[in-house]
Every structure is written in C-alpha cells, then in structure tokens.
Length: 248
Image (tube, rainbow, N blue to C red; front, side):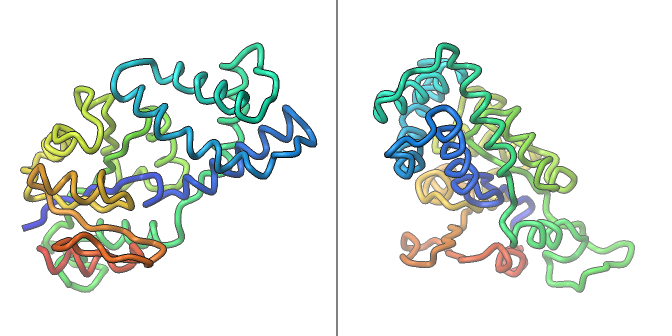
C-alpha cells in the first residue's frame, strides 16, 4: 500500500530546462554582447551540467567549485574571456535562473489533489472530518539543498511539500544511490515499499528506486517512448492522483 509520494523537482514539478536555457542566454548576452555563438549556449550549458554535478555529488569538489568549473568550461568552449570573479559571474547567472523558476501547469493541481484528505483513495474532494488522510508528500532531488528548498517555495508548493530532501541531508546519497531512496522513505517515516517516486529521469526516478524496493512511475512529458518493462508511465501529473488511488 502506498502511504507516501516523493516527487523529483527539476523536470517534474519545475521547468528547469527552460529556466536554465533562458538564464545562460541572458548571461552571455550581458557579458559578451553580440557573441556569434549565443544560440549554442543553452545546449553547451546543459551538456556541462551532468558531468560537473556528478563531480560534486561524488565529493570531488564543493558545490561552489563545480559552478566555477562549469562557467570556466563554457567560456573556454565559446572562446570568451573568463570572468575575473567566477563566483560573481555565477551569481549573475543564478539571478536570471531564479527569475525563470516556474512550475509546470499540471504540478499544483496534482499536489493539491494528493494532499486533500481522501482524494488519493478515490473519495470526492472537500472531504468531511474523519476521512482517510492523503499520502505523506515530499521532494527527492539531486540539487543543492538551499536552492531546491527555495525553488519549492518559489513555485508555491512549500505548504504540501514540506519535506525537501537532497544528498546533502541524506548522508551524501544522491539518486540513483540506494541510500537516497531508503533515506528519503525513512524521512517520511515509511518503508521504501510504502513510497512511490515520480520523476522524469529513468535511471534516477524509475529503475533506481525500484532497486531499493521503492515503487516508481515515469513522467514522460514528451510521450515519445515506452517506459522500461514493468513500470507505469504517465505523460502528465494530472494522471498521478488516479494512479496513486489505485495503488492505495
């Protein structure tokens, strides 16, 4: 029986890619006006994200150092002068990025439906007293703790999603390490098999939790390919409450 639901954040509740693409484009325009390869910056920045975040998550550098390294690598790729103060340069990018934090249109409705008493058991909303409480809700994400908490507040979901968990508070365990899932379940006061994780990344949000005994569902917003065999797939979070009700 599912008693808790964990959401991935970037790409699931918040449109990280759109925010990051817009931010790095604006940053380059401000720091190097008229650069001939400005249009390539989003793809280059996205390609640098995974490798450098992995180095931080593996304990090879601090979160701030991986940000410096990413900016340095981008400047090298675009053949632009490296900023004298990389921390200040990243802060400029981050300011643009924060302004782009927007929830997907289906996020608030799904979270609200799951947090309503009785809603995830198939009962009508506006439940009367004594109705079965909805599942415990939280976020399991691989970003930096302070920034991910700020994102949840910015998109208006901090009320129902009070538990925001990253590897920084899970003894260094980032998805898809098994300890990320077992630790997150424990933070909800539940066993892994009582928790459902929903997210857009197959390795981190679907097969990873399954290996730790946690249920999972793939959010495939593009709807272009099948889920791994044996795993449910949804193309919108609007379908999540009905899935959770069936599992409960």
